[in-house]
Length: 517
Image: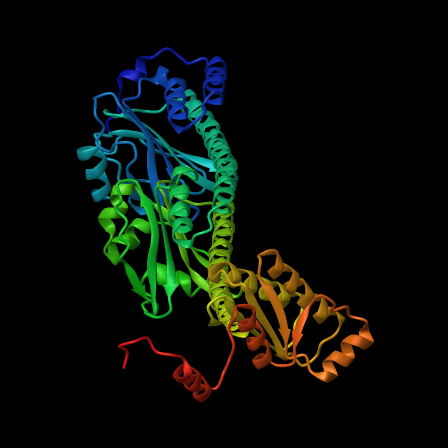
């Protein structure tokens, strides 16, 4: 078998120590995956590789990988950065899972390579020689670093040592970048959800509350899409009440029957805990909203059942463009969902209380109007002749009714320009010092308006009680009954009451003018 050759075979021997120091310095300065990939390439640049690939697992199940960095000397790589692929489709990945690198000096002739993999490597990726190193954290495989040549190549011991060091450093840095990113995301999310919860506490109305919550989950918390649905018991559905997303048009008429558990939101509603989807976009394709999911850049997502006061209210969902959601992140979203559910319940109770208060106010107003009518009927002021009024009193007289009597009396005197008002106390069952005081006040008030007040209906028993109480009625005109009072009032105006027959006889006795018949 002919020995593979490469232009790198003629390179001068590598001084490993300085190269390792440079690798440590470059990789330790990396702050994200892009700068880490650049640092890894820089650390291995002395070997003249034709292509590099840096990949990592997208999830804890290690089922999919994402190419986070790719460089090809020939120009645009066949597989661009950001590409995701199944772990089973990545050439040689299963062979490095235990921490050992995989080396191909010539993939075109190496008998270990399956023909399908050979065509992928040689024909599509132009890889003839490959050094595939695992990125390990303990016994956990995080990803892979692939250094490739477009021509056959024999890897030198120095090259393999440096590749191993760079792979180890890259694994540590990748884990640190991911941890820092998760911590930073957690801090940012805590702060964002705190601001969002504070904003929701100031919104009293349910519809505005839900719309604002959906907005804040995107604008503050940084999710690419949010959706909130509440139960409509009358229709038996989970009805859309709020939703926001990048390049996403919320449909307020959307609803899901509560018995259709094949839909993710309905399934989550019937759960007692958050339901996380590693690939929510795939679920969206099945449910018929795949285009909306794609337009937002959706990857992972979670649905949180909204419960408060022992009542299942609905579901809140959020989606992210990241490939995974940590347990801490899911817990924070669930906590915010609890806040939202409590706010919805508060808004509903406040609305019910407001409606009850409005009903009570309406009932009170009706009662007040009815009482006004009753008061008016209980203190009628009746004109019996020009300038003569009668105020019949029925029932007990207290301070409140005394004020009402005073208002009715003075108002009637002023309107009718009355000179006499008869206050009939025949219907007052009990007259004591307090009642007598109220009556005397009314008499004096009428006198101030130029009207003479006459108390009528003072029975002998009432008169005896007033004497025993020492009530001074001097100066107050009294009459035993209403008829006597009316006669007195008419007499003050030069009038008198006579029988109709006597009146006709008197008229007939008057002399007639001459010519009259």
